[in-house]
Structure formats: structure tokens, C-alpha cells
Amino acid sequence: MASEKQLVAVTCTAPVNIAVIKYWGKRDEDLILPINSSLSVTLHQDQLKTTTTAAISKDFTEDRIWLNGREEDVGQPRLQACLREIRRLARKRRSAGDEDPLPLSLSYKVHIASVNNFPTAAGLASSAAGYACLAYALARVYGVESDLSEVARRGSGSACRSLYGGFVEWQMGERADGKDSIARQVAPESHWPELRVLILVVSAEKKLMGSTAGMQTSVETSSLLRFRAESVVPARMAEMTRCVQERDFQGFGQLTMKDSNQFHATCLDTFPPISYLSDTSRRIVQLVHRFNAHHGQTKVAYTFDAGPNAVVFALDDTVPEFVAAVRQCFPPELNGDKFLKGLPVRPVPLSEELKAALDVDPTPGGVKYIIATQTGGTWASNPG
Image: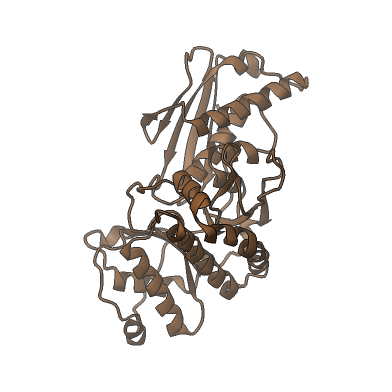
């Protein structure tokens, strides 16, 4: 029985998700309730994932956490909120008299070690994967089996979307207690097998302003943000859901870019203004639009979260030519062989017409590397 074990340990992994209809701004800071719904694509764990081990033992004297090998402050309010909620659910389950109660382990301290196989705090949704993984690992170790949307959300809003694979909606909800602010799957990862995702890593540096502080300032000062949440996002959510369900890449791509642009416009409308994009980010935007104009249709689409790195969506038959275009505009400096990570992409030559259409002065080293991936599912876990 679990209650008699000296040590209970669980290791699990969780995926990154990238929002195509963005979440920015909270109506409740403590419960982390958003001012608008959002929709995201879960990425494949073969390329990007967080791996977390949670262990409880009667020998541990305090809660502790390590991130990428470095011990972090376990007193962070978000982390504490997750721990409190999991322990509350575990106590609730125990008092309900379920099978296999965990009386002793409820008082045990927990040690958590989490590792990302991609840059952390660089606008690649590391906190979403991290808190989804944390919620799942803690739930397993404390014997909790309820919907974990709320637990994950208390750590990082968008983490609730990483609890599902494929295409995921986070419903903003209306209740003051947040019980209806949950994630649900719109379509599974197998739904659109031709969809590919390219992450153009411009900088792996930690961003200057974190999302939490940025959102708070935007909510307080941006009238555009309020307009977006109330008058724009509801229709976009419905349209994006339709594009996903019908595998309409033209519609999906255009709406993804428009929503990214509007999110960054609200950041500029914040006072003082916030700018997460770099000159290289803006060059990537230009490259995508010129590439699409050359083809006379939307073949690739960019989105940027709160950071300079671009996430580009395309169908698999477009990827080789677009990767060649990125190489043309941002020639790799030294690491030509390591420039492309993840899924293999066959090299193709660029036509002279496309080169002329791109019409750019190359920026060597502007893009550090590309991670090629696709939509993916949720986790694997391995109880110890």
C-alpha cells in the first residue's frame, strides 16, 4: 500500500503548447482567470518537453525544487498555490473514504526536479509545460485523480492547455471561483497530420519583462486589450475552431498571424509600452509575407508569444522550401550542421524568382537554429 512506502516518486513529461489565439490579461490574479478564451497547438514531445520528478518521503524535512539542475525558491507564490491545491484535493479524497487512502504521505514534504530540453523563460512557453508537468507529477505522487486544469492554471495560466494533446481551447469561464475556467481538446493530435511547426530561435536569453508583470500592466493601461478581449476574441475563437476542424490552412494561417500581431499591438498600447519582438523577429514577419506573396497564398504563418522567437506553421510539403528561405535570409554562422534540429527536412534549392521576391540583405546568425516539430500528445509517466 502506498501509505506504507518510505519514498514515493513519479517521473512524467509534459509538452509545450503554442497559442494561436492568445491569452493576455487576467480578471483574477490569484486564481489566474483570463479576460478572454484562447486556443493552442500542443507540440510533439520528441522535440520539446519538460521532464519532472516529484518524490515524497518521511525523511524529507522541507519542500524543495530544482529547475534545470539549479535549486530555486520553493516559496514562489505560484508553486505554493499548486502544492496547496494538490494537498487539498488529496485530503478531500482521503476524507471521502476512497480506496487506498494516503494518510501518512499527506504530511510528507516533496522534492521536485524539473528539466526542459529547450530554452527556459525565452518566450517558448516553458512555464506552461513546467506547471502542467508539475501538476501531473504531484497528482500522481499524492494520489489525486481529479481534473488538473485548475491546479496547472494556478501555476501558469496557459499550463492548463498543456494537459491535452492536439488542439486545445482554454475556456475563460464566467464564475468568480474559476471552476468553469478549464481546458478542453478541440481536436486530437492525429487530426491534422500534415501540419508542421518550425521554431525559429532568435534568442535563448531570458526575456526582460516576464509575462505576469507584462499582463498586469496591459490590463491596467491598455484600452486596446479590453476591446480585443470583449469584441474581437469571441468571434476569432469560433473561426479558429472551424479552421482546425476543417483543416483550412489558409484561414488558420491568416488568423494566427493577425492574432499574433494584435497581441503585440496591445503590448505596444500598454503604458509604458512593452516590446517582445526584436529586429530579427520583424525580419521574419517580412520574410513570411514575402514568401506568401510570391506563392499567391498563405503557405506559412508566424506567431510570437511574449518573446522574440518565431513559431511558424506550414504544411509538410512547404517546409523544405521555407527552411531554405530562412537559410538564405539568416545564413548560419558556424553551426551549419546543427542549424536544423528535430524532424529531418530535405535540403532543396531556392528558385531565382523566390530569391528575388525575398529581396533581403542577409542577416548572418540572426536565427540561431530551427527546431522542426509537429503536433503531439500529452504524457508518459513512470511511477517509482
